[in-house]
Length: 97
Image 1: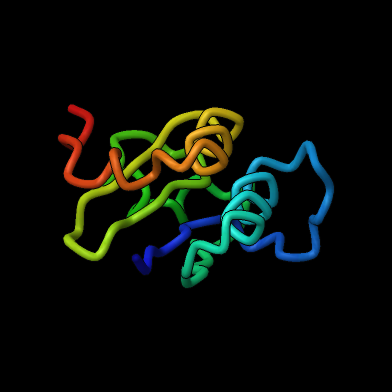
Image 2 (image 1 turned 30 degrees about the vertical axis):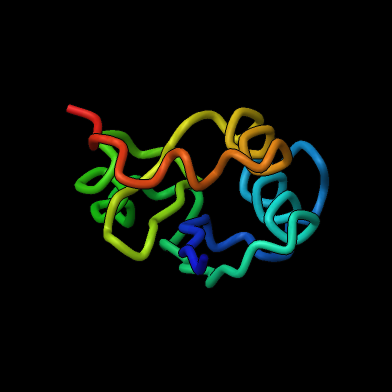
């Protein structure tokens, strides 16, 4: 399964409390194949148009599956889903309204 991890541009932020890094690290540790998609500045809401359009809100990170469906929760919840091996269960979930 290859997924896309949509995250902020702060690739330098590699500490456990950073939401994007928390999810990226969980993907690494679970050996999930993924591609990083940097969605612009972490602070500029105007650069988050794609995120808002796809997820219904402006927060990073979020995951896009090969079929185009997306998965977005708080980063700790996404990381736990990945660690528990349940990421595939989120594929095809309805987009938020």
